[in-house]
Image 1 (cartoon, rainbow, N blue to C red):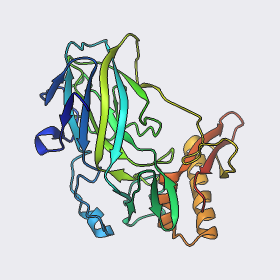
Image 2: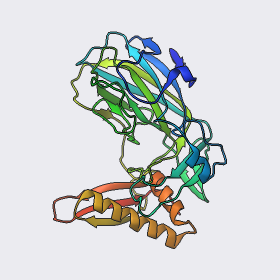
Image 3: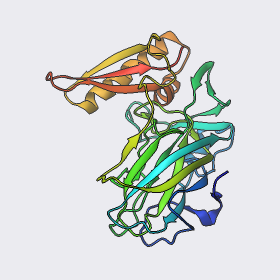
Amino acid sequence: MADHELTREEEHLHYDFDRERDPVLTVEPGDTVAFECLDAGDGQLPPDAAPEDVRAVDAPGHPMTGPVEIAGAQPGDTLAVEILDVAHEGVGWTYVAPDAGLLPEAFPDFAVHTWDLDEAVGYFHGIEVPLHPFPGNLGVVPVEPGPHSTIPPRSVGGNLDIKHLTAGSTLYLPVEVAGGLFSVGDLHAAQGDGEVCITAIEIPGTVTVRLRLAERDVSGPELETRGPFVPAGYTDRETDVRAVAGLGADVNEATREAVREMISLLTSETDLTREQAYMLCSTAVDLKVSEVVNQTVVVTAYLGVSV
């Protein structure tokens, strides 16, 4: 059981980062804290969400639980965030929104899928997606006067969306203000590297962490996590993997081409619509940079589930 618990009640939530915000809890270094978090839709989506429900979501940013002051933390220190557990609540959402994501010109309309989640698997139109829950947004407060949006990641953390920050991992962050002022939110049940449609499997849930001060110098986020680094859903290096390569003049162009090719593969070999294939890419396809030195850049998209 955690030393402290923060519920997702209104007084524990905020939607930006600001050094002037008072902490809702002060802990000693080494204490554990269980953070209840809303999903990225701010708790506004019903279990049977339709596109019009996504359109109606009105939130100024990610709902973040915190901030928590770490007693004695000073600028120049390093905060270690040990992720002990991430628990979902049986439901999640993936959605597409206009003017967002990697391919906005190809997907101009709202679309949404509501996931039923077992302990280890989520279900997507007959496809089983293995879960690896993690917090997408976690960080301390920047020293610059705020408020600061929760959307872009920063040297002090924030919306990193690193899917390997699962239970057993540790994130190291530079402290820039007294007390650090740590917050967490935007939990994901699963995500492909890239999160290409703008969302993963967005979930409400509880993340339990240990907050301690570490004897190391960092200038930006560093992490310790477990491998092997294989596509989402695969734990065996010998497992066959489907993949497509995207080529382009730069990483962004090659990435877009890789995702287009994977969407084409999925729609040609399954009954998924283009919107559904895009959402599956965001939750179960990993993007890897294959090379950047041969004039044309290659990014490869790896499909981590059996279709």
